[in-house]
Every structure is written in structure tokens, then in C-alpha cells.
Length: 317
Length: 257
Image (cartoon, each protein chain N blue to C red):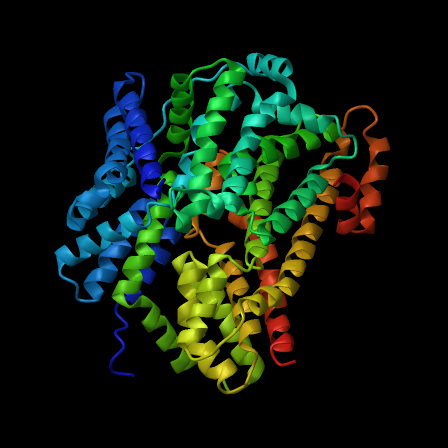
């Protein structure tokens, strides 16, 4: 059975190679700290689950310190000239799209067919992570297709991966750091404290106020935690179930559906949702790291108001 | 209840907000916030380290989607993928940056709504294809564009992917969020059908398309106003199709789809 661990090992090996390339690159401005950062990260994928959690914690703090004090800067990227790329684009034509589109196509095909791919009574792909595994396999197949089509090598593709990892820098690790923070916050009882404050200090006797508190609370709490899933139990347990359903007898299915969407409005407005907001800014080489958030804020605020009115109306039909 | 809830861990939240406002390095802010929240909850140091370590291990699936496609995308970029995307879009005369993104918003939201969330994404779709196409469509219409406009189009491309994904995926019955919601309500003693949760998401999903689609349409108008001056020959003649889009976001998407 192919489990998600294979993807962790694959990524670990890729990161180890990239880290090695950076350490050996004499032109890199910070080759030892930047290379070391990626090698530490590689270790977490290769042997992280066998190390004691305290040791992993130390490695994580070490990575944060390296990144925090400017140790993960990028080298000047080595790319072909624009003319050479245009020429290649002319030569290969729309065939160039095939490998790029292979990733989503394979992901979807494997996601849909996974439950039928049974081999000797065992599913071929680990079912609970099937989309991610399909995605990983899609990337590997796409790379093979791309190498054949462009007559280039896997070695070159690793150099290109290194160029992009170098450009992303620590932003590539930030989403996972924030995921970790969400878990630590919930261990430490941050959610309970927020719910306590909301209920203790806001007058929830008016229905529209209670509805607004639930929606805005979902958005704000999502902005703090960077994730609607973390906000949902807190706000729904604190305000939704006891007040909106318990006191005002609203329809719980409407409440949770629109409540979660209110949380997503928060996701659009927070740097804490790094994989959606900060990573694209780095990937697209935007000088303003908050540029994506700034574009999203008007959509998010409008939708939040729409949600409050939709919930106030649809929940009590 | 007043006495049992420890409010000190909220300092962790304060650290995050202060850190982002004061523009410290986010990696450092997050590490400090985790340590502070742990101390505020009276965890001993080794428990804090263990919480950080095991939290980091449990979330290892998050970066896969960012890092795994980089090798193939980088290789294709070397061979002109982004340039090809621009050439392709220049063949479609009716294409504008806003209309292109409206079509992408519709496709992204509809495919996510049937569970196909893998069809988009920033590393594999937005960077190599959607953003270059949006830039290419603007360049076709207005000639060379400034970096400020280029960056704005890229930010809109990323935002459109997010909006389409978020407000589409939550009306797919088997999506994790719906499982989470139904399980949570069950523990609170309330039984709801997953299907009902999915259906009640549809009004917001439609509003999300209308709101963001309208803003993309506004983006086209704004670009038209700002850049018409430096358009290549025939640029003024092209204002007719742009104003035709005034009949609404949905008709514009119908043109290209």
C-alpha cells in the first residue's frame, strides 16, 4: 500500500539534495545557513517521526532562529534568457501544457478510482490521504512526461526546484509552522479563553446581534488561528449551539454551513493563513507580501455582511 | 466558569498580532508565540518543546502541496511554459484579464464543488498558467504594462484561486469540513444530514461568485481607464467588447467558456 509516508520520504530526499546543492554553491550569499535550514527540514521528513518530539521541537526552533535572523536568503537565480525561453515555447507549442495539466488530471483520476484499486485485498493507496497521494503520484508522472518531452534531465529539474525553493525561502515552511501553532494553542486552551470572553462580554439577547457575533466571531477567530477548522468548534460550541439553536431555535444545518463560510472570509484576510496568502505572494514574486490579502479584503468583508443577513434569514425560515 | 478559565494563554495571540504589526520575521513570531502560550498555560519547558515537535510532525502533510510540484513546474518554466501561456491567450481576441479570471473563478468553484479541489492551486496552476495569462491578456490590449499593474494582476490571480476554492469546496458533501461540522453537532446532541449542510452552503457560494466576479469586472474597467492611453494601434477600437461586458459578469463568462 502506498501511504503518505512515501511522499514524506520523497520530499525529504528532494530537500536534502537541494540543501546539499546550496551548501556546495560558492556563489550563494549564505550557503551554510540556508543550506543547513533545508537539510534540517529534510531530516524532519526523513526521520522526524522516529525522533523524540522534544528533539524535533529543538530543530523547529533552530529553523525559526536561522530564518528569523536572515539566514535563508536566495542566490541569484540561473535562468535561460527570455529569448531562449520564447524560442523553446515556439518549438514545443501547446504540448508544454500537457505535463502541467497531468498533475490535476492524475490527482482527480486517482481520487475517484482509489476505492476500486484493490490489490490482494489491500487498497493500493492509503484511503484517508488519497487526494494528497494522488497529487504526489501526479507530480512524479508529470515530471517523467516533462523530461521526455523537453529532452531534459531529472538533475536539471532538481536545479529548477532549488531555484524555486530558494525564491520561496522560509515562506515555504510557514504554513506548517502555523499549523503547529494552532495545535499548541489548542493544547494551551487559547480557544476556551476566547469563547469565554465572547460570551461574558457581549449582549446576545437580540437575535441579529447573536447572529452577527457568531459570524464575525468565526471570521476574527479564523484570522487569529489562520484556519476556519480551529475557530469552528470554539464559536459553534460557545455561541452557535447554546444561543442560536438553544435560545432562538434556528436550523443547525444552515448555521454551520454559513458559519464555516464566515470563517473562510477571515481566512482571506489574515497572514496566518500562510499557504493561501503568503506563499502565493512569494511564489508570484510580489514585492508586497500582503498584496494578495489586500486584493481579497473587499470580497471578504462584503461576503461577511452577506453571510450575516443570509444566516439571519435562512436559519429561521 | 469564571474561575476555571485561564485567560493567560491569550498572550500568545497578542504576540502574533504585535509581531505582525511590528513586522518581525513570521517564523520567529510563530515560534515565540508557541513558547509564550505554553508558558502561560503552565507547561514545563520540555512539554513545550514536545508540543512544538509533535505539532510540527502532525502537520507535515501541509507543505507537500507547495513543494512537490516545484521540480516539474520549474523544468517547464525553463522551457517556456509561462511564455507559451501568454502566446496562447493572445490568440483569443475577446480575452481580458478580468474575463479570464471570471472564467477561472467559475471553473475553480464548480470543480471544487464536485470535490475536484486538485484542479487548481498556486504552485501548479496560478504561477505557471493563470497569472502569465492574465498578464498576457492585459499586454495584448494595452501594450507593455508597468510592474505595478503586473503585480496587481498576479495578486488578483492568486485571490481568485482562493475565493473559488474556499466557497466551492464547502458544498461538496464528502469534504472534510462538512464531516467536521456534522460530527461536532452530533457530539452536541444535534443530528443533521451532511447533504443539508452542503445545500445550505449554496446561497453563499453563489454570492461569492457574484461579488468576486463583479470585482474582476471592475478590474477590467479600471485597467481600461488607466491604460487606454498607451494602448497599441487599434486599442481604442477594442473598448467596444470591454463595455459589452457591462451586461454582467455571468454573460462575460459565457463568452469565453
